[in-house]
Structure formats: structure tokens, C-alpha cells
Image (cartoon, rainbow, N blue to C red; front, top):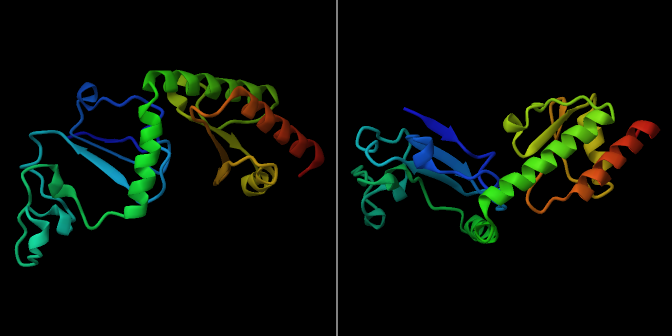
Length: 201
């Protein structure tokens, strides 16, 4: 059985479950689908459902959720059997808004744009002497460039003070890119990091 975690790619990478040939694929709206926390998605390949009862279930995972029958577990024959409880309604509105924006874009165009920006960010930071924790191979990098730093929280705070949003994770500072990002954004980021290094924060 194959399970694909597409959370970090959905929205910037075209996804075709038939091409992948996977049994399950999960993603969510928080990251590159431009939504907010609270909405996740699960694809289950036709034909794998009968052999797999969900390890956890909720009232939406019933044949008739509105029967409110706590004494019978009757899984639907389709992927609804993997649903849990009541979805987060405000998050659903956010997810729909983000996906509506992305639905107007060609995903191959998005991938190409983000790939070029990722390479530009990688090359610019390396030329500035920064050590990177993300792959040098563009095919493996995805929409993030991760920079090694002795105090990424402090650096993230410095950048935030200049209107630049990054994400410190352990010894890394993650720089995320999307279709709305531009080369000029990376130039501003690199200049701010150079200033931080020059002044000591």
C-alpha cells in the first residue's frame, strides 16, 4: 500500500493521483493552498476501501450521519468512511477562497515559477556565504529554501521587523515561495540578511 503526504506540495506542485498510482494521498489547505488551519483532504483509490476500516471515525463517517445512532458503525462504501466529525466551517470558507484563486492558474506554470525563484534564492544565499540545509538539487528542493543559522528565531524576528515573514525550525530558517513571490522579494530578503550579518542583528 502506498500513502502520499502531499501537504507541502499541494498548490505549487501538480498532483495526479492516477499518475502517482497511490492508494491514499493526504493534503491540507494551510500551506500552499492559501487557506487557514482546519481543513485536510484524503484521497482513497477506488477498490482499496473494502479492506480498510478507519482506525478512527466520527459521525460523518456513517451511511446516514443524521440518524445519530451511536450503537451501529455502518461505514459507507465510498471514501466518506474516512471522514471524522463536523468540519471547521470558517476554515472551509478560507480553503475555498484559496483554492478559487489557485484554480485560475496553470499548475505547471506555478511549478516553473516557484522552481526558478527557489533556484534564484538558493544561488543568491550561497553567493552571500550562507549555509543551506535544503537540497542543492532543484528537483528535490520544492517551494522552500532552508538556511542554517545559529539563532534562527532571532533572525526571523529581525526579518519580521522589516516585513519579511519566514519560519524558524530548529537550526533552520525556512523561506517559503509561491506564485505571488517575485525575484525582487528575494533581493530584499538577501539584503536584509546581509545587513543582519553586518550589524550583528
